[in-house]
Image 1 (spheres, rainbow, N blue to C red):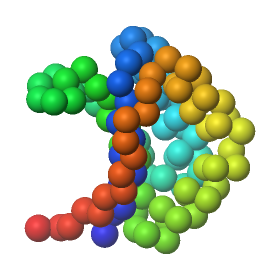
Image 2 (tube, rainbow, N blue to C red):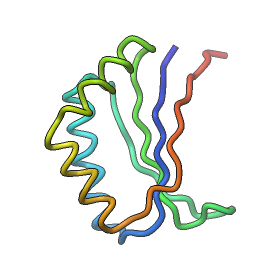
Image 3 (cartoon, one colour):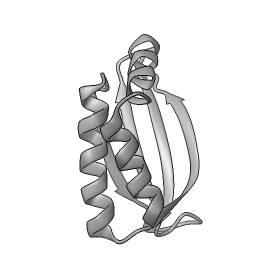
Image 4 (cartoon, one colour):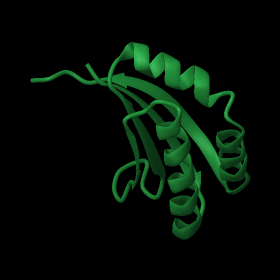
Length: 99
């Protein structure tokens, strides 16, 4: 079952956030994630906020990717650059079920 890592940010201009998300995706994929994507909320209580999703194939691959990404200097730079322009609101781990 796929495992996801979702981080929610407020702030940041679209061009900046998209460029940073591309760098973050490259780092996550290099460190074992299947993929990543960025979405922006357009309605509801999180309107205007960004969601950055990371997907791994299972818990084992998520654990390896999470351990590896924390040691990746490029990812640490991307995270630092992101936090300079946006506020991290939440971080959650999800698990998908085939239905």
